[in-house]
Image (cartoon, rainbow, N blue to C red; front, side, top):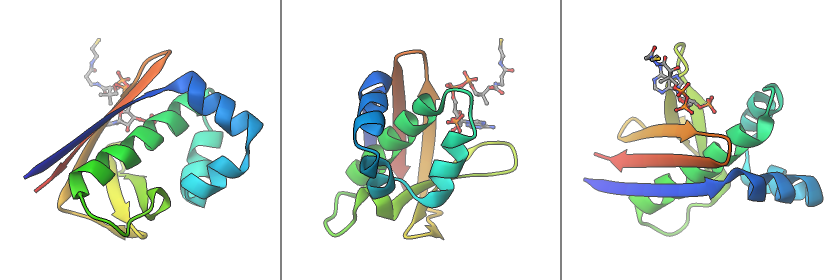
Length: 110
Ligand SMILES: CC(C)(COP(=O)(O)OP(=O)(O)OC[C@H]1O[C@@H](n2cnc3c(N)ncnc32)[C@H](O)[C@@H]1OP(=O)(O)O)[C@@H](O)C(=O)NCCC(=O)NCCS
C-alpha cells in the first residue's frame, strides 16, 4: 500500500489562476474546470483538486504521469474518485477537505 498527502494554500491557487489563466488549462481537465467554475467559491475546489493530483502523484510514485493525467471524479453522493488519463482508477482512493484558507487531500493506493 502506498500513501500520498498534500496541503495547498487556496490563495496561492487563486493568484495563479487569476494572473496566469493557462495554469488552469495546463493542470485541470475541462470537466474539473466546469465543476469548479460552477461553485460559489471556485478557488477552494480548484485548490483541493490540485492537492488531490499531488497526493495521487505521490501515492503512484512513478514517472510519466502529469498532473493533468490525474483528475478527480465524483459519484452520485459527491464522493471523490480518481481518473488516470480519463479512466477510473479503482485501486486508488481519495479523500478531500477544504477550509477558508487551506485544502488537503490524501490518496491511498491499494
Ligand atoms: C460530505 C461531507 C463529509 C463534506 O464535508 P464538509 O466538511 O462539508 O466539506 P470538506 O471541505 O471537508 O470536504 C469537501 C469535499 O468532500 C468530498 N465529498 C463530498 N461528498 C462526499 C461523500 N459523500 N463522501 C466522501 N467525500 C465527499 C468532496 O470531494 C468535497 O470536495 P468538493 O466540494 O471540492 O467536491 C459532509 O457534508 C457530510 O455529509 N457529512 C456527513 C456527516 C454530517 O452530516 N455531519 C454533520 C455534523 S454537524
